[in-house]
Length: 364
Image (cartoon, rainbow, N blue to C red; front, side):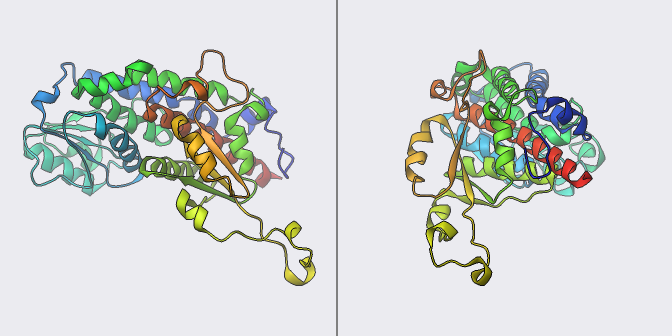
């Protein structure tokens, strides 16, 4: 319960207060993954194979597309049989042996339209996740494979759509990457993992065993989101974007090393000389939410132990596991990208809960 008196454990009140359908959108994250995987499979009925491809090019200049590209590139690059290039525009060397994936949300973006025209004009295989409309829809002169969002609420599920499209193309292109995703059953299995996370975070599940509600409650005080490597940084940025667009709350983000190097505010309880009437209120140390995959959790827990307030945000890490869903201790063999997808889904729910609470407080 927050200061406004809104009880996150009142499931019926939560659903009534969710006027913008954010909780339903969060519950649909797995469906967005599944729909994107199906769209790519339909678009590429025959797998081109690494032998037929010189390079995989990801064009994603901004927004959720850029963050999805960062997550995929960090996970896939060591496991693909072809070079992977992440860029904002079509490279000058692009040709008929290259596969180009264009990730974006704005069908009116002239930069995306120009990239599509350039890649198609050079004979590359071009797949686009943007809606087929506006200047982007007119680009490519009919030589583009369209994989637009197929579900309502695409603006809330775009990062899942983009990342799943990239995963599916990696599977189609490279047997090694298919083998990497095999432990979870490929991209469709990744959608199942996201659905399991939705069960963990559904409104009827109490806050003490609901990781998304726990995150939403942490936002009552000062919070910093942190990551330790490029993919964690991209996930952290997407988490902050989800909370900002849903609840209007801006959350600072930083690298773990930056958080550790920052000066730590003195707590009132730490000084017998602090007088709030003279010195003003004591500065409260922020809670640092450190994002991690299961394999890095112990290292990061040890590295950040000196922080006065910190919590690890780990896929599968909850007090009471959901039947059939893997716990954190069982995730070591699950591809990191699937674990990151699970954390992105958790933040979608957390952002929805934060928005509902903020809206309720504004109505009082």
